[in-house]
Image 1 (cartoon, rainbow, N blue to C red):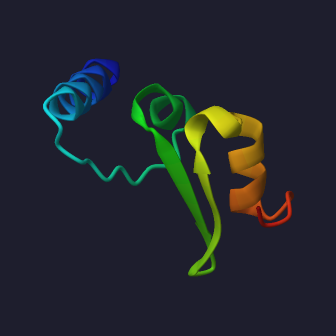
Image 2 (image 1 turned 180 degrees about the vertical axis):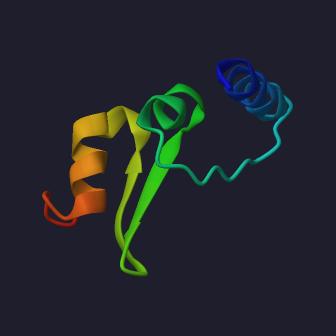
Length: 72
């Protein structure tokens, strides 16, 4: 539910503020861009991108996932 997603994202932000590293595995681009500092994209078991969140976009990450955008 929307409420549960909001609670989880809030928890992740609180943990980050305490210096705790968090690994989030998700295909939900808005969530990733809300709470993540970096994004690593895997396609077919291979890493195709590792970028700081401020140096990419939701469209680019989606393209990297699907193969529509070449590896970064």
